Image (tube, one colour):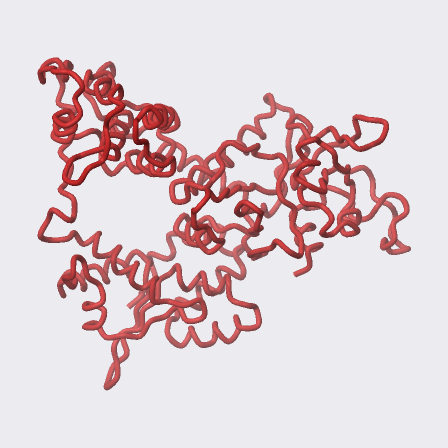
Length: 502
């Protein structure tokens, strides 16, 4: 697809198609369009920072400058103008001047030494069931566009409530991806300047994956209470005034800069994780917890990497454990307690708000089915290829391939894990009878990734081939190519749970 077509898909008639004056391409029988909005273009990052740009009121002006701009405002403003007589400094790209929101953009900034490619973003998107429409490569990482099916128009009613609604959606989209990819920039402007599509920076584009705003709002409302942790569903303690963070042991750990990590002794990671669990159990927002842990880590004589702190806090706020474990607290205090205090002094509040955590997998003789399911998915993902997402093997071969600590998955656990993964719609299985038979297995993620990513000339051949293995593939490809017909259930809606994947 041409860059001009991508630009048109983003702008959604927010600006004129052709120049009002001196158009070189407007058909003779077409009258000039009336007043519409404006966007802004910038020829370099330095110019963008200095607001040295161009006001653009037509798609034609963007066509003429293809590959000349590095940044633009993909969302449309009511007007744009210049702040100087030389017409170099632009103004008008302020939030209160927004006319319509066309897309949400997530910025992925790769840290030094961090591995990040657009396939990792797509994999995270498939897990979240939030597939972007466009991914652009930038000098420092990537930007993912979630282009709307129809523009979200901004109204001044109710103190610009429409902007606040869109902001909440944008914020939750970023937080959802940040749970998997710590490279997400959570602080950049929600509807400001972004990288512009060019012939040299388009990493991925799938025009069928535009987003319905009402569905995004519904998703955001469901995500908000369970993931941002501002209104935890858990009733963790008997009395509102009782909080784990108010205990003396929390201050004791936070004020010890000598905590390090050594083999066989609970150290920095465990201290941050246990403290973060206390903050989570006390109903404190994840961002506030991270600020405290970041300061704590900075004061350590041997601090952890920032990405390790981010990952640890996110893990504590995942909801896996509802609070800190007293046994872990006592072990940490035994190693790193900076002052001699009795248990009575360390745990002053009279409540049963302590939580016994399950033993780590490495400490148990048997693995849980959920852990084996994750192992099976990891193995299948490691074996699938972009053009061949299905794997042919016998059940014995699969059993031997899926191992933990050099021990293969037990046959009963394998059967149960496969049946549960099939029922959840995460894998598709076909049994081939007779000599040379066995299983043909594919993950849902691998199938969809192949349909989305493969070259369009290969896609038709792929679809015809894969349908011979899985009838579900026909449903998936149809849903992806024509998502508008599946609005009630969505790409991965409840319908997938009803498929007979046997």
